Length: 246
Image (cartoon, rainbow, N blue to C red; front, side):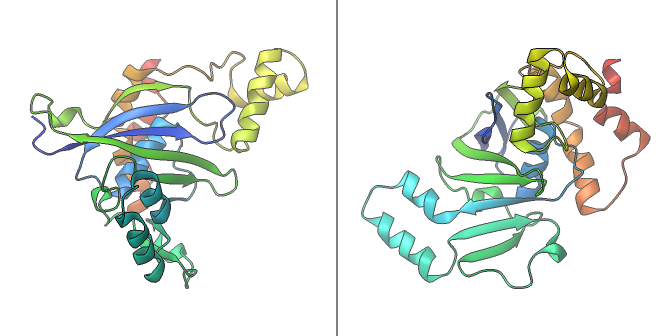
């Protein structure tokens, strides 16, 4: 049974040319690094680029409070110089001096529940600073379910859209890829077909059964890559490449 509270999130690929979103659940002892690996798995990010998580502390207060404490809490963050919080696992790659109003934390050491403290609070996963993919993640609810085995988590319970195309040029490139395949002919279509190895990709499809299988395997592989700097084993590569479906 799930002996710890369960956090339910809604995550959406920002500025996507068509809906790409996930609703998922995880235990409330998750750290931001693991949350990132879960998101990367669900949105088809292949752990080949740097990432970070951004929390807009002031905006979280504004979006969830309308009482007399709202202005006071915002003032506390402003006076403390913590408008935004950034979390990364590559701490040595952070700026030597954070800009005013920002703080940097170790994603592998920081619990999500200590920052996303109530429903409505959100954060953003930024992946591949060249392509600029962003996934906005909102905490929807925290609940208990004694009948749900903890081994079933994390799990995705709903979703739409395939995810990103790695090194595809961000959401602009995703839009160009979709248009090329909708047309079904021409130079762009031929180039994308050759590059992706298929002439009929379904960018709107989402296989929830397959994704729940991957959520039990892939986040651990990504942790080894980012935190331990280990190369994937042959078995890990087989999982990442979905060789189990062949």
